Length: 307
Image 1: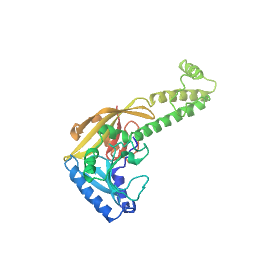
Image 2: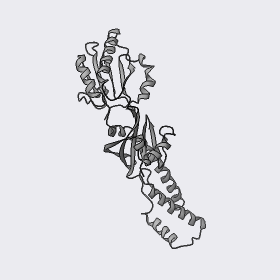
Image 3: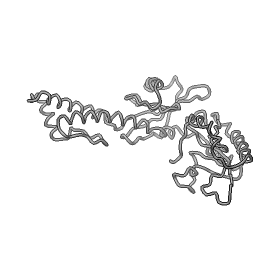
Image 4: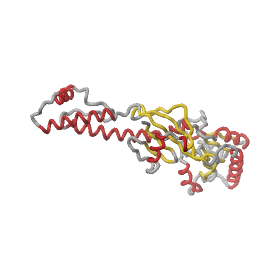
């Protein structure tokens, strides 16, 4: 999916500079945009979450929901054509993750935009497409942060295993995988000597062999394969803290699978395993990975490693 997710906080941070962008258009265009914004707000106000418009350019605004850490899209009144043949021709535009406009290629932002010269049609587009993504989709937006943390933690272990092995023999693991020493002929023979209680002529060499065998075992226990986790999304709904929890599995250092279902909890019903680790992550800076616990990615989103 080529939709660019922009955090609600980032939208607010950029709002003070938004007047500089999209210099084309005149005051009539801005009047049309202001009326469009008001009509869209009225159309969406019946939904179960508060809607906020944050200025994006002179004639467009991000659309934020109280229960979503990322903008669900934007609305605007402008000419967004790549080739403005025939002069300036602004239209009402709705941009959303839920839109796929096949007239545009995957890398073009207009692929996620529907345009219309009719304000009624544009308002219908806003009601149809400006909606909250499912927790399953939201869980995948920042899952790469968890992958990076797990991978870096494993690389520390792999590096330590290689350093011990090079003191004994020039056999190291691949920097791109988790291949261990224990299938190498020389490794097996040296370990067998240790198991038999062999006394090495060089005591330091014997110590290095023991360190190598131990490091290999640690690496085996740390392999990044099939690690279960929870994506926990927190927000306020009807005056209560609510937690959407999606299960996932870190299949390998570069790939995660997200379940197709989710569970919703209030604070008093959240499983103890998640509550305990969430308390740790809420005290840390965003994206500080904690081995055995997980990582916070900001916006009330946490990836918690399962036990």
